[in-house]
Image 1 (cartoon, rainbow, N blue to C red):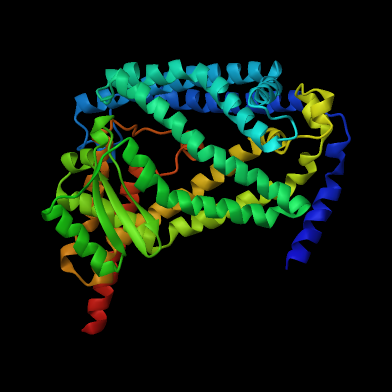
Image 2 (cartoon, rainbow, N blue to C red; image 1 turned 180 degrees about the vertical axis):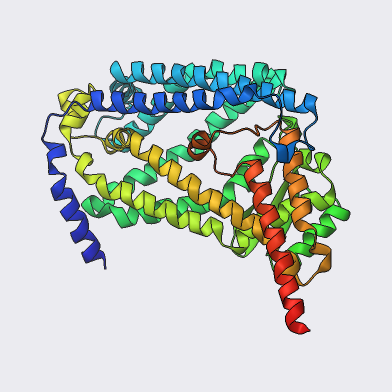
Length: 470
């Protein structure tokens, strides 16, 4: 099996042999591609922007949005769109300048000087790669800090969502940097060690390494990392806990823990999700969701989430991500030993002659920018399909569990979705192309329309079944 895989990969590499020899202006190519993506995203925002001038919600939502609430929603959407447009162009200009003036080559040089102060030379490529990666990350993240502060303390504050203090903002920033180093350094060392150990046959071994890392993060993030930022407490005994535990038991969902998270510590936005390994799952509900919705509506939201589990959507997305990763890694060897690629980005001949793995990989990923945009659209389409399936699962629970108490689950889910949109001031008028590119979920009107269809189908199926019994 590995022999066939390696033979196929060799054939691909032979076809891409020109990458290692032809003097292509990769920097110009990347500038064109990145600006094309930026301008396309700006175009999408300009398509969406006129919809924020509408004075009434879609007819299907008219009874759910009070005029004042809809006005606030439109104002919030317009402000976010303006911010996205300006920040998107600003970030592109900064990235373009960094690219043009050789930030990556400079960062590699600084990384070498840093480890030299510790007594290590350029032969310690992994150590220099770690110093390079964090130098590059730190420098490239600085220009976006004012944008992040503005978004939190001006935009979100203006519309009543921000609960974060400046002190908490700074603390979160340093925590995230520290966690990035604590996790990132060993990950990068392991990542590069696989390359060094496996040589040209690294693809299957690196995929295994990345899969193990992904599975580890599934456990570590919610149990170790997230508690550093938010407090997870057992959901108190009561109607909501009883409903969720009963539903999980009926569906044989392997519920291990049921948590409430203090999301209100930073924002008024709300959410709910589950995580864990196949045999041990944990459900997390934001305190904001509990305050904003009735227990039966929160139960409906969780019924939707359990629909994702029932249809194995996380596993399917994991499989798709593995296919995506395989495709990226399969093409990478052609760029791994390509001196012209590094020379195009201002690396000196001494470095370009033997390209550092991490540098070649980062440059290669940057060159994939337009393709990744297309992949993102396709993944959004898959995700929206899964959202519809999970909604249908919630509606059909009555039939599946033969429980009349679940008969109004579709209505409850619809009310919960409307409440989430109202409380979060979510946009309800959405351009179709903007949505296809940016949204992993169907719009509210699309979901409510689909819920009506699912409910009608359940009623029709029940009527047919009753006729057969007669």
